[in-house]
Image 1: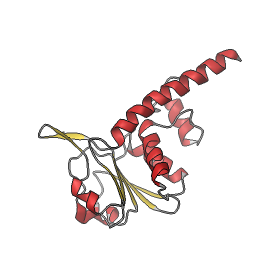
Image 2 (image 1 turned 90 degrees about the vertical axis):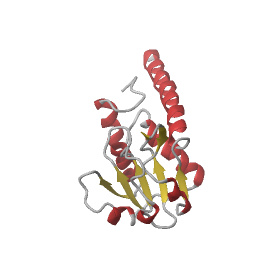
Image 3 (image 1 turned 180 degrees about the vertical axis):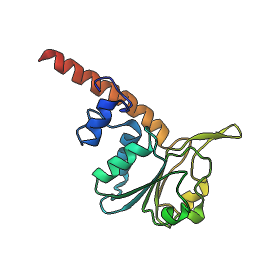
Image 4 (image 1 turned 45 degrees about the vertical axis):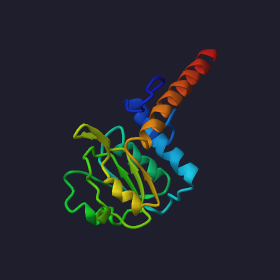
Length: 171
């Protein structure tokens, strides 16, 4: 955990799940940063997480639950995903399926964190159709949304973990 900038190793994952992370997983840190800057209310909100991967879905589901959101994770096995996405106050996308979420699948005012980047006809795209931005109160586009902040958080995590390591050596 002392050098796990992505927070995906067993020790880092355990500390994070227990609410005692040395550093937040970068995508979660990026989401937390955006939430803080935009004053998004999380407690009591329906947070739907699409995908269960170690980099986006799994840590996002844990973090939103820790913040008091009502969390539901859906994946490719979930039937009729619109039933869930239409109820989302907050939608976190990490499936890596271009255009998976269409505007008719979300309610007005939804907050969409799209971290599901993939390539489609040579372009980097997200899980949400860009037209979803018209219905959302907050929408992170791909490219240019969560990605650059995530990269910055990786470096911040590196510095944090290096400082912690140095402090432990001084003891």
